[in-house]
Length: 256
Length: 256
DNA sequence: TATGCTTTGTACGCTATCGTACCGAGCCGC
DNA sequence: GCGGCTCGGTACGATAGCGTACAAAGCATA
Image 1 (tube, rainbow over the protein chains, first blue to last red):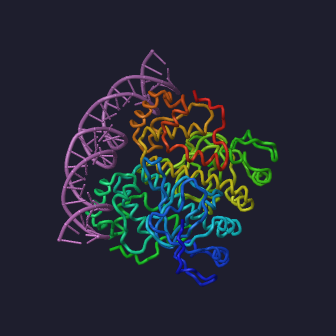
Image 2: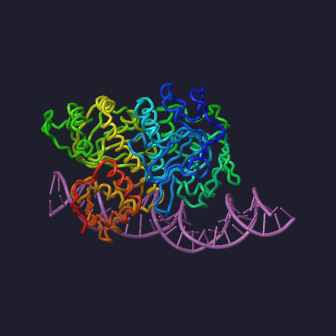
Image 3: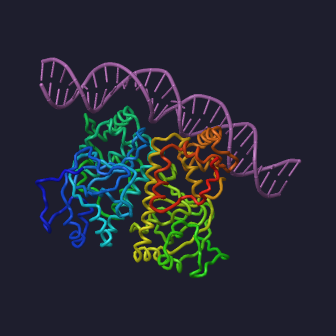
C-alpha cells in the first residue's frame, strides 16, 4: 500500500521540524511518544490511503501533497466531501473510537508523509490527553469543512463552488500553481466537465486565475476567496482558532 | 434558554430508563458521574439550543423531539446539515476540545431532554474514557451523516433528498406521522417550496407517504428508503455498528 | 358563520446545469 | 516529424429547479 522512502529515514530524537501542522504543534512529550513509530512514506497521486469500510492499518501525517475524501453513490457518482494536506491527518477516525469509515480517501496530489501503525497511534492517543485533544480539534475543523461542503453543494452555483475548491487547494499547497484537470474538478464538485470549463473561464475573465492545460494558476487569492462566497471561511477560521495558521506562507504571494 | 420542567424532577440514583440512546447505553459508573448534574428540560419547537459561534453553556441529551443543525450563507440561505433526536446529544463539540460551533442548532420538533452544564460534561468526559468513547463514536456517526448530506446535496434530485429526510425523521420519532410543512422542508433541503410540493406528490403517488396539511404520514417505510437512494444508509449503518439500534420500535410499523 | 391567517397547489417564463457528442490543441513517444 | 492520447473548448436540445405570483384549501378564532 505505502512505498517506504528509502533515502529519508529519520534518526530517532533528531531535531526534526515537520511540515505537517499537527506534528509541528506537538510538545516534546507527545513527539517522543510518536516519533519511534513514524516512518516516512511516499504518497503517489491516486494512491488510496483509506479504503471505504475497510479497517485502517496505518494513519499518515502528510508532509506534502493533498488528500481527498470521497463519498460515492455506488459507482453512479463520486463527490468530494473534504480535503486536506499537511494541515491534517489520514485516519482521524481512530481518535473517534472506530477503525473504518464508509468513505474513500486518496491522494489527489502526490506527496510524502509519515505513517504510523493504527494500533500505535491509538495507544498514543489513549496515553496522551494533549495529543488526543489536538487530533480531536482537527476532527472538529474537518467536520465544519464537511458541513460547509454540504451547504455549498446545496446552494452555491458551480462557479462559487469551484472558487471555494481552488482556494482550499491553494491553502494547502506551496506556490500558486494547482495541478488539476477539468475532468478531475468536475468529479470533485459533482458537476459536468463543460460546466467546470465555463466556470473556470468566468474566474479567468475576472482575472482571478489563469488556466492552462492540467494546471490552474492562482493570480488573485483575495478575489478568489471573494468569488467563493460565504461557504469559504468558517472551516478555515475554525482551524486557525483551534489549531493554528492554516497556510504556510504568510507573505500571501498571490495577493496583488 | 431552557425551561426547567417543574413536574418531572428525577430523584438521584432512581432506577431511570432513558429514552436517549446514549444515556441508555451508559454503564452504572458513567451514569453515576452524570446523573447528579442532569436536569430535565422542556424543548419547545423553535428553541435555539446552540447559537452559532457562541460558547455552549449546556449540553442536552434529548429524550424526545428533534434537533436540526443549520448552516447558513449569511441570511441568504439556510440549509440543514444534520439532524438528530434521542439518538444524539446537543453539544458533542465539547468532546472535541472546543466549546462553540459555527452552526445553529434548534428544535425542529418540540420535546424534552436532560441538560447538563457544559463544564460538568467536559469534566465527566475527561474523567471517563468509556463516556468519552461513546460520545466520540456518536460524533463519528454524525460526521458520516453530514458527509452523506453533502453527497445528496451535490447529486441527488429533490425527490430523493426529500425521501431521505423523511426517513431520517421517521427513524427518530415514534409513530408514522411527521409534522412538517412544505415551507419548512424546503428550507431544510435547500430547495423552493413548490419543488417540495411536487416531490411530495411523487412520493404520495407511489404510495409511500400520505401528505396532509402540516403533516406527512409514512405509509411504506421500506419504499421510502428505496426512494431515498444510496445517500440514505451509510450513516445509519455506522450508528448501529458503533452505538446500537437507531430506531426504537423494531416492529417496523410502517412496513407493509 | 364569517373573517383571516397559514398552508398548499399551480402557473409562467427563466436559467443553470445536464447528457452527449465532436473537434481542436497540447503533449508524449517513437 | 508523425501517430496517438489526453485534455480542453464548444454545441445542442432536454430538464430540473428557480423566482415570482396568485388562488384554493384547511384551520382557528371571533
